[in-house]
Amino acid sequence: MVRKDHRRLSIVRQCKLLGLKRSTLYYKGKGESPLNLKLMRIIDKQFMDTPFFGSRQMARWLRRQGYKLGRKRVRRLMRLMGLSVIYQKPNTSKPHPEHRIYPYLLRGLKIDRPNQVWCTDITYIPMRRGFLYLVAIMDWSTRAVLSWRLSNTMDSDFCVQALEEALARFGKPEIFNTDQGSQFTSHAFTGVLREAGVRISMDGKGRCLDNVFIERLWRSLKYEKVYLMEFESGLEARREIGNWFRFYNRERPHSAHADDKTPMEVYNERIAA
Image (cartoon, rainbow, N blue to C red; front, top):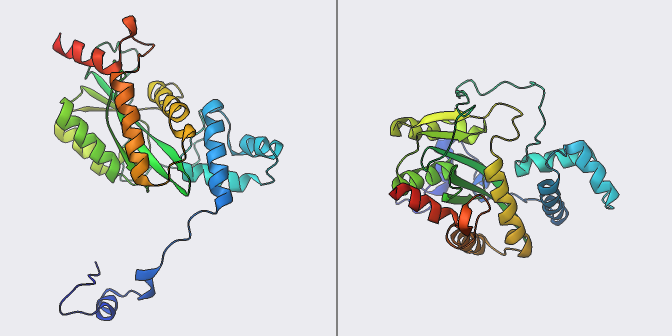
C-alpha cells in the first residue's frame, strides 16, 4: 500500500495516513537459526521413513541422535514444515467457519482413466539457507504431474496458480481430491474448481492412504534430487525440481505401468484412446 515513488506523498505522510509506524516498512524477519534449519532437514528426511512419528516420538528420536531439545520445539518446527502425522487425531479444533469441508467421493470408486480424478498436496523443500514449499497436481490414474509451484509461504496463491495452469493445459477432471488444509479449503481454490464444474472431494481426518500416490511422489523427488543437493537459492531449486519433474513424467519408468512406460506416455495414450 505504500509507494516509495509516489509523486505527491512522502513515505512519512503515507505511513501516517495508514496508521503505520515507518519502521514497519524496513523490518525484516530474522528467519530460523542455522541449527533449526539443520533440524528441519533432519526431521524432513526421517519423516519420509517414519510418517507415523509425532512431535513426541520425533523429539525422542532426535535426542538419541545427540540433539538435546524438547517436544515443544520439535512440534513448532513440524508445524512450520507442514508435516501431518498419519494417525487419527483427536477432534480438538474446529474448521474455519468460512471454509466448507466437502465430502469424500472416492470410496469404492474405480479410477482407471486420465482426468477422472486429480489430487494435490504440499511438501517442504529444504535449502542451504532456508526452505520453500512445493505444491504439485497429479493425475491419479496415470501418476502424471500436471503442474507445480514453489512458494516461500503457505498461503493459497501458489496452489491456485498451479491449479489454473493444470486446467489450462490439460482440461478439467471429473473429481479433484485434496486434504482439508486451509490452502485447499479456501474460497480462492475451491472457487476455481466450482467455476470449472469440477466435483470437489476432501480426505477424511486421519485417512493416511487417501493421498498415498502423491506422498510416494514426494519421497521419490526428495531421495532422487532434493537430498542429493543443497539448493543455494529459489532459482536453483525451481530449475532443478523442474528438471526432475520433466524426467519423472517423460523418462522415468513408473512401477504402476506395464512395459516400463512413463506417466506422461500413459496419460497421452489413454487420452488419445
